[in-house]
Image (cartoon, rainbow, N blue to C red; front, top):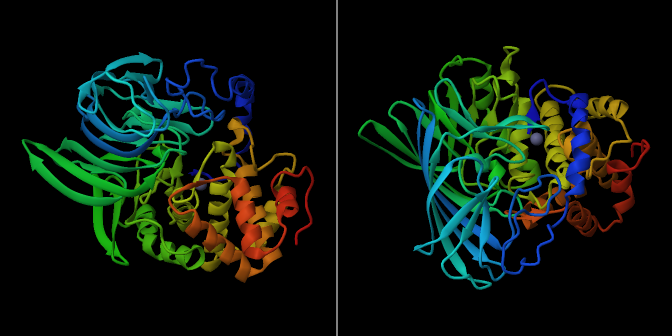
Length: 471
Ligand SMILES: [Zn+2]
């Protein structure tokens, strides 16, 4: 993710620190004597209390939704295929707002209840540990946005011509029932039905479009495991361009209200070129499709690395000039964050530090500032009292995560030399492809591939309280 007007994200978020005390107070796994039978109501991640669930592992989401911009109403049918990781008499899904009709587990009617933003499902018969099961949820309503204290507006947002579902660290539960934590990645098949004439864009490969009775159904398949916050849905009046790049579909969409030859269109048009530049350094592009979506919706003040198809807010292109730096940042996340995903949000520097560093590499390549110039400026501006690892929920999009995180990546490069450094990155993206990992996993891999002890170096650059000497 990158915010508009980028970086120095800074101080505005500090007001939320008071909230952190309360959040930290409710960290960890809720005490629950019935835990062995009841799936936990969250993933135990203090950065997103209440999000995610325990007791099962989702393999696939099949979502069929219909949205009518005339009344903002969404009707949905989700089929979730999962495996029980414990014996379960009931389990939770995350779902914000919306009204649930029928719920079925393996085709049999199940009881369901709402507890805040949780949907509690009690199957007719308990699920044995290891059992594979399918949950069908029918639901409807007017989905709502969420105002995050850290990122800004997210969730499901009705726009002038349609809607946008987007946001980090959580947004998915505003439009479908979900295990809403990146530790439970899954594949997605999504069908979106909208009035004829509107586009409905999602993640992954386009798998057909049909029209009937004034409605058009757009189908998308993301067959690589995807974290829920990386799923998106964009509905509206868009110029959609479908081509191929290196044998894979490349789908870009630019809001029709933006100029066809303007800076947003020009920036997205370089998607394939930027992806190739990154692939030369990070290893093969990890997904089956490419693309990007440029919004005209001014309330979205950021760009997000939604899997295989990043979404860009309009602020990046307001200057009238293209911004390929943000394209490089969001595409770098396809390796760092999307393919190799967080296991917990306190490690978000693993996403943002590498994406920011990739942006520095691209800018140098594209005739902008050299990496050394950027490093010198960022080093001088760094507040070393702020850690990159476990920065606190209120600072998860702060400079310590992005800029200091990228400086740590550069320090590693200078220490190892380019050859070994890029071998480390390619080993990371290859060995961890499609999975989840932690900071400790990265340090261990870097030490193994380089044959050097790197813990002290990375500690100093990521969390030490004083400025380390540049290697
Ligand atoms: Zn980012």
